[in-house]
Amino acid sequence: MEIRMIRAEEAQPLRSAVLRPGVPFEANIYPLDYDAESLHLGAFEGDELVTVASFFHEPPPGEDNPRAWRLRGMVTLLERQRKGYGRAVLLKGIAHVARQDGTLLWCNARTDAVDFYRTLNFETEGGEQKTERGTGFIRMKRTVTPADTQAGE
Image (tube, rainbow, N blue to C red; front, side):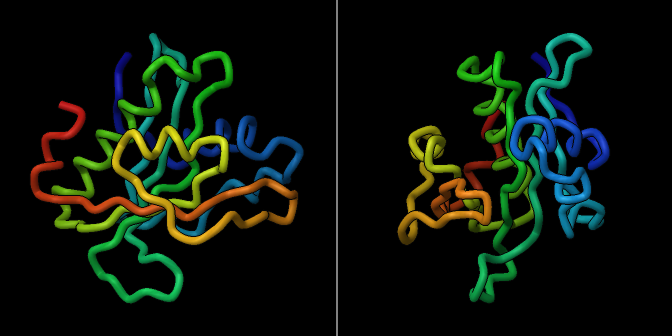
């Protein structure tokens, strides 16, 4: 497994295929995909991209926290799930946020992924919400500290 930075254009097809099949491709292009501070990470097995995650310098809705970052569009190919790819990518992203002096990482976690995020010290905030397509999600947050700069090393 190799984890490395990728371009937004590399993350978008996997987002589309796994997270939002049947939705127009453009819906998988996020507003901050091309922002200079954004980070897109991919996990590769050989030449195959199996996991992607994007990290945006963005506070949660209704909050004014200039040190908050958002995890969005994290997805692993179905046949590669539960093999450590997502954990490895997320740990690298947490380290990046820590190196940028971030103090908070948040996401809208799919309800079936809540337990995964809890293993990495994310906590739920609020109750379950639904998307327009009926997918359930819960906002989760994790404190990021300077010690996290070594995460995923």
